[in-house]
Length: 378
Image 1 (cartoon, one colour):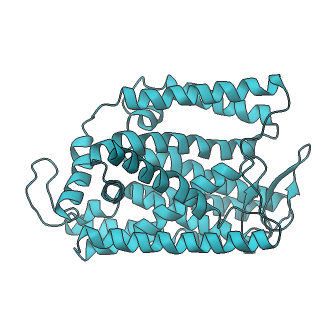
Image 2 (cartoon, one colour; image 1 turned 90 degrees about the vertical axis):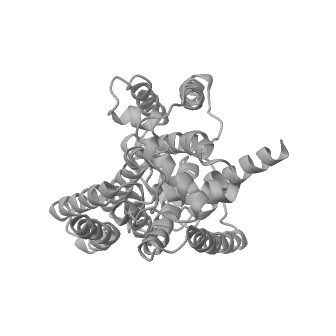
Image 3 (cartoon, one colour; image 1 turned 135 degrees about the vertical axis):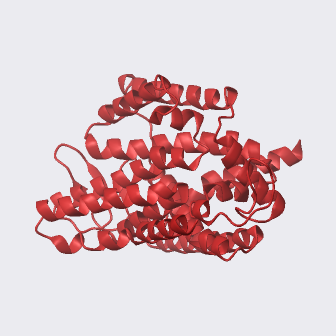
């Protein structure tokens, strides 16, 4: 019993607390906030960090996860190409995570000494009973979805590959050199190894001691669904000025997900039934978060405000995270960021702030080129 509790706590640490702390590097009070017509301070970050009224918690959580995923992609792919053992990835990623945590701690102490450290403001009490209705509906529907995602979990055809790869990685200490359908040893599958999301699940299972199947079907599934709604809340904060409108936006999104299982291939079905798979994380988390960042950029440019340097770090990390989730993610993320760059060139005169957006696409471009090379060779 105690062992199970410890395993759960370790997964909560890696999937919840660590991303929140890492996200604190990029989501913090910095500079003066700018206001939109008819609302209070919404976004700040004249220097490095991003912040938001009522959005600090989801920004920290999702942004921190993007930075962790981007680092895992950069660490894991070269190790796979070198055909090195899996435990090397575990050690290197733990070092990377430790460095980020120390940096977050240092920045937190610095802000505390300056008297600028603020607590999370994402769950402040509402001002009236009427304003409590929408949050209660949202959290109720979210809890229902999380319970159903675990209670009605099932293995689809892709589990025969993705979960099997995660299990083989943890048990054999090798990556992508086992045939998922037979268990026989083969040459390293470099083409699929460019999107090592199953290896990340194997990493979680390795450090927590939880079986891979339970890690994928329960811990990762629940986290990805909740984190997907956190990304949608960030988009709602950009699209709607009033708090009630944002809650309605999230509730409407929940209804689409609940009744979106009319096909095996809908985005809603992927979010609920396949959230443990990289392609689902790409569509329900990475791309929505990247869309939020681009909306944030355009609103900053509309207001004539400076763009925080942390924005470009998060955008680069999101593109790398898209490559981790799926080889197609490298192309889709680059298309989204590149399309926003072209649109920005047409809309704004201050193109200097748009220029770094091209460099944010470099991880996706590199992994897309590698994919084409290995596909041609294979």
